[in-house]
Image (cartoon, rainbow, N blue to C red; front, top):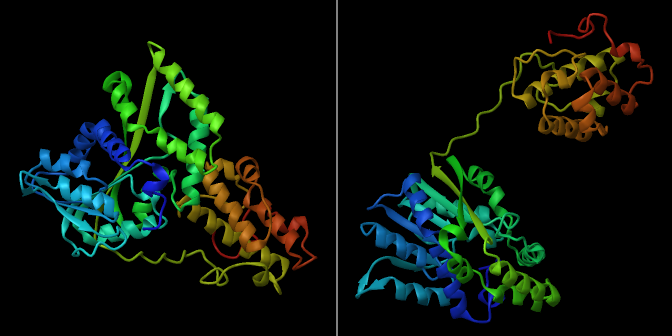
Length: 406
């Protein structure tokens, strides 16, 4: 499969990588399992793990929930060998093994109750495609749990080791170059929502050496990954050597800390519903009803018509952006007086730029501008009617020059 997890890029020693993956599962498992149960995993469910690797996680779950009908999906032939071994205990098959891509599992529609995708999406070129495939094989009401890293929030130490940041930057650059995304943790709620999952939730699982001990952390880290970064030119050898030295010094401190976290995002497969069409606002004028308002629309209008149409257009836009159709606002209201936030201001600035090729700073919107001020900028920049005067933009009553009720 295309993506950034390839055994040869992670390690020269496959067995060492298998041991690292086992230690990584063991480090988080108890907290993960409790969270899976909180999300909805029950004994007896139809469970699937997509991208199982050697199968340590699914083996643990089936051990603790032996009535589950479990399936492990994996594409790598080496890991398939490991899965086939771990799926047998005393000659009994404790879970099924399926060699397939997470993009195309070849499994039945609407079958599984609970799906786990652990530390997989961050390595994929097309995570949206993988999410869509997992949704397909889940029953309506079935739950997806995605566990992921975000390497801006990875392993931390006390005393701090500056070279860790250098190593993580190198790792991010390396995986991005291969089609992965080590920063995907922060994006996953959005990706699940776009993938038509509902009831989306995010949790963070934390582990700490004062609670777990040092050994589980040390086993779950592997210097072979850092060596590969050096070999591939992403990390300087001198930085790695200093990192190892400082890591050793950190461990000698009696109050040293090793801390790590994982993102856990869950969602429920609901019935797919069509997005309702937005109703036309009763205040929309003929030019803003179904057609974009831009420089071409303004041509041929009188200055009063231009101001009127722009006033209606921008008041409706502000109401839509603020998601308050009944918002009381006129042309002279300072936008900061209606508590416009930075995201709404950025969206309004983008509309003015894209529709009217007129630059307006977000800070001006947040601090001092009214809709009148925006209209003045647009008309002065449009060149559509050189007769427009400042007085055309100001009404004594604030509304009497507008056509229609605002």
